[in-house]
Amino acid sequence: MERYDLLREWMYNNRVTFRWTASKLGISDVGVARLLRSDRISVKRHAEFVDLGFPEELLPRAEDYIHRGRAPLVPVWEQASRAGA
Image 1 (cartoon, rainbow, N blue to C red):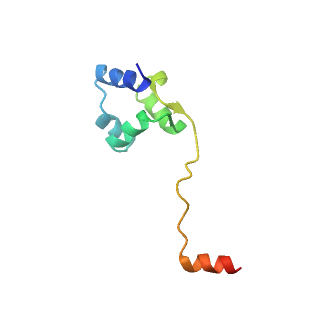
Image 2 (tube, rainbow, N blue to C red):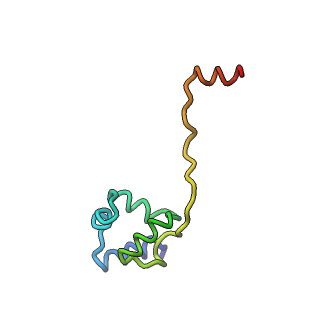
Image 3 (spheres, rainbow, N blue to C red):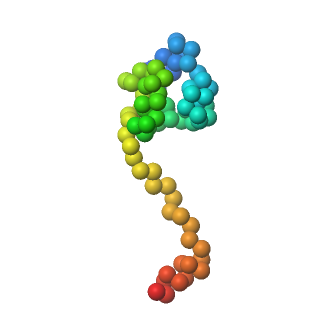
């Protein structure tokens, strides 16, 4: 079984729901599911899951990383002035 499947089984056996976890972490239940399905989560979130009683070996890898995202949009007139400089 995959890590996520084992985690879901643990949650089912211990009656832990996404909604309950979300209320404790202050995020949506969809956000909890997304975090638990991912390959890595922030060290802060990992510690919060462990504090709630989640088994550390079933959680995604704890790793602080920089999410680059998309580059900020620059207005056209600023692009033109930068090109002429």
